[in-house]
Image 1: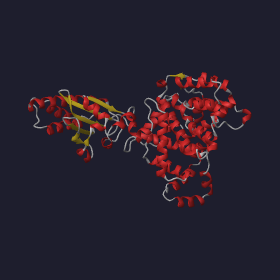
Image 2: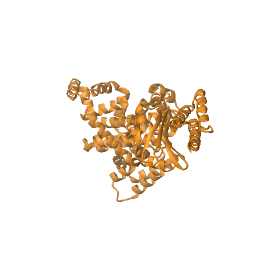
Image 3: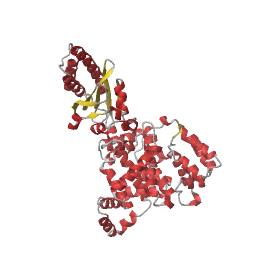
Image 4: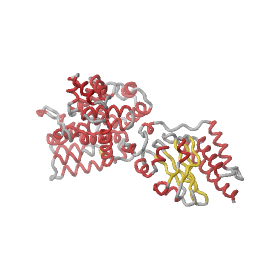
Length: 505
């Protein structure tokens, strides 16, 4: 954040209104070809453009800015295209900055992915029930977060700082927003939505969050008692204004984005559960049934919307524990303190001793586990392989629950384990490859290491893998120092295995 950044609502609106959102080259080419294809209907053109929310926003803003005699703003991209005409839409497309996808700020791509996820949730949960309003539901949910897009495009560090401080460190949102922006975020979104004349349902959602939060709090209070629908209905009957508000179709837009944003943080947090309960109250559906629908829509969203380096909440559904993006927001682990480094050096000295300092394998692996643990890893599991590589059994476990000591794995059931046993190597898991790799790991192993960052290292003697070392930083990101120390520790363990084998012979 520089000193030149705005600090007032009006100044922010002026600056953000001037931001030209970048679009990926492949989306630009696809939209251009569709616009020039005379066989395409307006609906088909609009559908093809939704892959790039920035294109949809640009066209809708322009149509509503020049609404003139139309009066009401366009509620869908199809309506906006009809008002502008295809030639004007093509001109707007050519004026947008075109970049390679990797060059577009990661924060902007991440936020637009959340918007795409929200539109999928809205289509799956609400559009079928309100079929005549499906376009308003779809485009309203897709563009609800649009006031934030120019903010993260112009100053991408703001989104990351807000996410880390509010979601990762639990600081009050109002405090963080005033420090970063000089003004609360939600009033800024409402003001920008009004300035752009975005669809009314978007403005309606922000008005509720900014100007009428008491209504939302009352609804959340009733929604909390999801297991007693009759009592909920009695409470609603006693409050006609709240009951009328709860039937408004425009609430779909806010609910879909609430679900998408909160699941981006954590599927199991209270914030997400509140949005689930409120949606259940709106749809008159039990939470457990609604959760299945939400998860199904999230999976469908992940199939169509993804990107390199982006986090999709569906990745967390692959893990059988409380996995969330919060762990990815934590800062890298600090280097181990000096007293543990001195212990690490002592353990490594024993591993490197000539002749071997160990009378049996159990003593060797005990020292190896302590070396890795004192080197900065918070959870350590050492698995030994049998001669046929048909079984892996736990030999040492530190920082893990007692069940880890009884762990037995069949490598034939896991492609990852088979590959690690075939030859010595290392696999590092992170949010970037979690979705692809986690499904190939045994569920019992994933249940022990609840996090998004994991290291698996197979160690060999005479070219044959003898043990598998699995470590993490409590689920958080690895620091550079820990990785260096771990690498040196593995070298010491390899030397210890070699020395021990010569003694045994």
